[in-house]
Length: 231
Image (tube, rainbow, N blue to C red; front, side, top):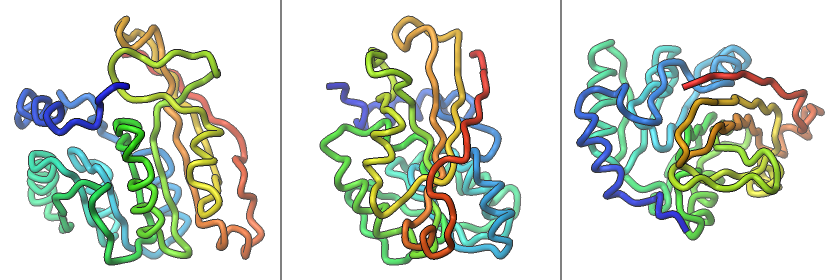
């Protein structure tokens, strides 16, 4: 079993990156897919929880759209980076230093998002992660997650990096409380041998099942979007 959910590994990565967030393997400059759609669809800003916020790109985007944002990470360096970026742009957000598998939310959130936290976690922590998410997502809430995708049953796990999980297993993991609304794939090529020649990231937009059923909305993906990116 890969020991990916190891704080020491993350301390080393943040120490190496210093103040240069572009060095972080999970750094991204644009909001995670589906966030803009949720902001536009809801219209009125709500409360958002960014679990494993990293350098804070998603937190800053939502705060800039008027959302009440809570940024959670177990790495002090991640929260310092997020807070510094928020201060530099005049944005306000709340930060919490905690491990999501040891933290109990005291509020309900209209949006909970995970840009690559679960797929870096050891399987024995999955139940605690799931419990936290279910406690945090409001009755009318949305959940967005980025997770490395196992495209076929025989696609091997990489020697390093996140765990690959099939779309079906992700759906089952969050069922029945959350139902998938939309799904998209991003293909990435030109990687190292340790990771594999290519990999795919799955983007999932879930909704509380009760609210989907009450509104008569389709709880299954409306189609698959594909994008190809080379490193």
